Length: 370
Image (tube, rainbow, N blue to C red):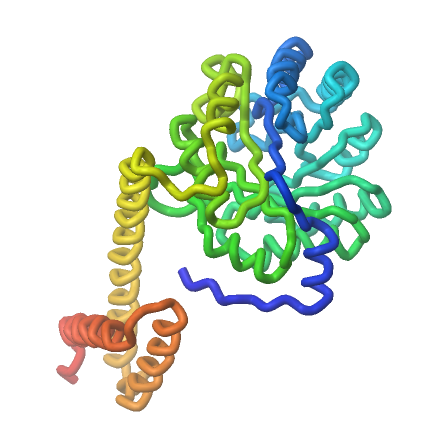
């Protein structure tokens, strides 16, 4: 996938610094995927408080699940539980809102931070309604990336809150829904994260390693990688009894594992030798996925060649002129240079693709036999 580098306007850059610049220690947001009961909430919150380095206790109340038969969250009733957590532990609390009504309900219970989920971000109408509901309210808002790798959609959702005067707006990289197999549940695209940070310098960039990883064993590795890629915060799912969690059980840590990870993760050092094997496995898996995408992409191009051949056969299209091919190669050379590829390699690659394309066209019945 080609992502263009986007240079924000001066107002964008000032807004990024104003609404999310984070210095010092990373922001840590932790707690269960879903609120399940007041007892579970207090148990989790007291465990988070014990470690002393969690900035916000998080819990999902409204769960936008794919299947209507799965746990949909406890809803607005859980806001009372979050307020009790805040009163008993003194911790700041956070939850996801998926519509205007959710946001207004959360404000009634003094929730300290709101985030907008990936599914919601994909609907600009709903995002605008939530932003309007929060107009003039002094509350931090974090915006997750949309499900599909669309930088403009992510930036646009953030901009809606900024334009309505929300003083602190940040971003959450939670990975993307991509075709093909991966070691991850939602593979990260660090390049898109960096592009957003370039457009909004100083914005608080939080990584959600739980949703990226999909399995608890990968959460520490993804967390480390995220910090190396420029994230300045982490949102991590932590449950007192992950195996029996009502949602996303495989990706949640227990409190002990969570604090072991935070303690052992030196954010300034590079990957150690102990990390190299899982990292190599991760990169190899990603490479396999890209290779599969390449094969399917080339197959799609050959199908387009067959369609062109059929149109030629019906005298509806002239042969592609050599000058057009040269222009196409010139454009591809420019793209190659931008992405760090050698133009001569790209030339050889597309020369072979063009040869195969000509073979495909010549093999179509009736072509060149008029």
